[in-house]
Image (tube, rainbow, N blue to C red; front, side, top):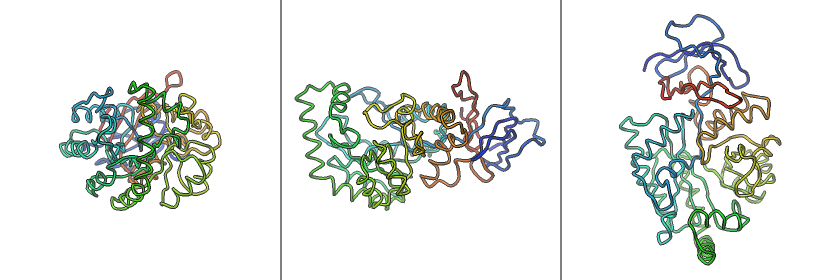
Length: 379
């Protein structure tokens, strides 16, 4: 690893923005200073912003690459490399790749098993030095399924499972309380007839009744076995949040109501919302808008969800909304790193990883000018 110095940069620190230089040696930040001498080989950032590399906790992007169209599979190695490169290009230097565990074998390919094989191929590419950014796993434990227990037992501590989220997509509650929203989504994606949709809903409800409690218990135990952070998903009521807190959950993904978000704050649970929700001005499922939680100071972390480039855009949107750039940048850097238990990244500070992004703003939009992972330029 060669040494790196970025100079003449507006450096976004946890509580302020300074103009100065960042020095990196052997992949680690060694010094952050205002003014002073810089090496001749230093990169002049021309007063662009330099922020920590973005930390993404929940993205469906890899799943989108392995299945670019319904019922269309794509070679996994090519999909992983494309996903990795796309994230690097938008300033994401750490990602928790979301993979669903818990299948319905006799349903459509949408519910087929894939996570173990995909994870194996991901780690093979990592071991070969083919990946640009830092990858961890986020196992989305679908309790409304048949095979959750068996699939979770296929993973171990060697798999870098950093997050396990309790997912319950049973129709009629949480994300899809409004069945008309679910119907529009499922029929639009899979071209189901009304009778086929009714069968789909009935089948999922039966699976939840048969397996839900057992699957939830197993997922909590598996997270402890992996040493992973446990997250909730789509909590809607204070009762949901109380149950999450009883499991030891400290990260809430996409609470669907203000009530749930407020309850998370009372229980010391960090609230994460999706960048697309923030940018679009609302949830596509008809749930609480991310900007409403931001205005109530109930938003801690932002995830790109299904649009990787949205993460950077959302951070600068929040900066304008709050009139506080350091606080906004923390929602995509320091806060997610802390929630995931990563102590070596997320801030620009001596001793941390040299994961950095150079940003300028053009007509208000953030433009990525350079990306470094452990001091090596990757974008």
